[in-house]
Amino acid sequence: MTARQQPKNLWIGRWGFVLAATGSAVGLGNIWKFPYMTGEYGGGAFVLVYLACILCIGIPAMMTEIAFGRRGRGSPIDAVKRVAQESGRGKIWSGFGWMSMLAGFMILSFYVVVAGWSLAYLWKAISGGLQGGSVDDMAAIFGANNANPLTLGAWSTLVTVVTMFIVGKGVQEGIERNMRWMMPGMVLLLLVMIVYAMFSGGFGEAVTFLFSFEVGKLSSEGLLAAMGHAFFTLSLSAGAIMAYGAYLPDNKSIARTTFTVAICDTLIALMAGLAIFPAIFANGMDPASGPGLIFMSLPLAFQQMPLGSVLQVIFFVMLSVAALTSAVSMIEATVAWLTERKGMSRKAAAWSSGIVLWLLSTLAMLSFNLGADWTFAGKNFFDWLDYLTSRWMMPLGGLGLCLMAGFLLRDEIFRDELRLSKRQHALWLLMVRYVSPLGIVLIFIDALGVMSIDIGSQWPWFLAVLVVIAVLGEMLSPRVKRQFTG
Ligand code: TRP
Image (cartoon, rainbow, N blue to C red; front, side):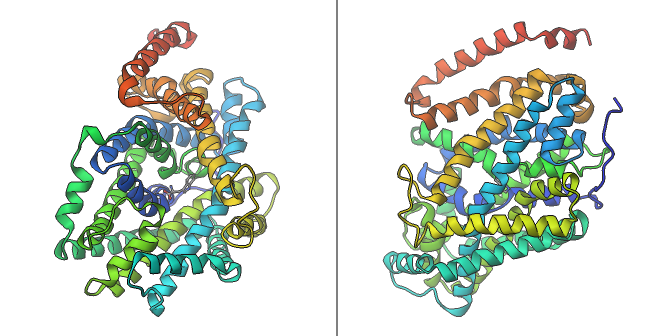
């Protein structure tokens, strides 16, 4: 198989891809969303289901995405197109590449707003603006933070500018070089927080909360949320991992790098839980306080702790760095496409996509103040971006890529790229053909609300459906024969 494209850019360092992909994966999803989801969906039970989703859905899907990227050696649009063409399929399949790129762009346009909150809070933490005696006071601070479009917009603009600056400098000089200090720095800050938490009460409770498994607490809502989050937290189906995969040297093992990234991502999410929940428990607060957890409960908890004001600064630096390393990955697909296809320089590509991004993110930012009632079907612009990407575009893109890899494209391509043993390859196929697609379809059914899913009681049915589809699929798929005949 020598149909491979010649790479233009490659990660230089041994850890280049792993650092960049972990930087992409570890973000607000780990530090902001995972802890509050765990809080809402019942602790250990949710954690366990989440781990299963990462293993069975996230990891195979990530391997697939990297394989597409490395084989096609280009932006997601070109990568998917080339891999499809190599299998004798038409250009139309690059539609999934388009959707990924668009999803990444749309996610970034509301992600910079949340990253802007993080910077704003860092500033408040430094300047002593996070004082208050109750959760209500904290809610008032959060409200005031969002009410002024000029300051809120300034913070998200700052995030956009820094992101474009890093991306504009190029893959090695901008992204790889900055990840080399940002990632270790972030982990170090997280460790400082955990060590502090170990000695300041509430740690035992946090450990019990995160790791004790009670079947009764497992809800199907939690399961669906865990599946969706597995995609989000690994940055899947939004072009980011595929774009980074295009720079992965040929001699690296896709399976090994995927496992490393997924394990780092999961460990950091759990560590974030261990850093955050002790403070919550030590101050007798509710772990299930939703999206406001780190912006309202946590600052309040820190106030009541010795050295809390220092810790707070550490926390928001860490959060901002995590958000920035993810933001960089979301725009890479677009920038790669503009440089490859429109002949732009990296800088021109970064700044011109930055301008479009800025306009979209400004609309998203306005959803919290002036545009709060510019709603359509009950959702404001910010909510629409979130809803369309996480409920539709990402699952659809994931489904498309998995099914393409599983059924449509030549298996040799994936054997060539993934280089798994026979048995491992069969397992990967089982996951991308049936397990991930069924999971994704369940997310869709839930999003459409056409039927209520209660996995707790209906799971034998789902298992039966899975087995029937898998048996039929294997019988009908002509490729199966080829697999056994070698
Ligand atoms: N994974 C990141 C997080 O957990 C978010 C993210 C970065 C992302 N790049 C992405 C999500 C691409 C979807 C697609 O915060």
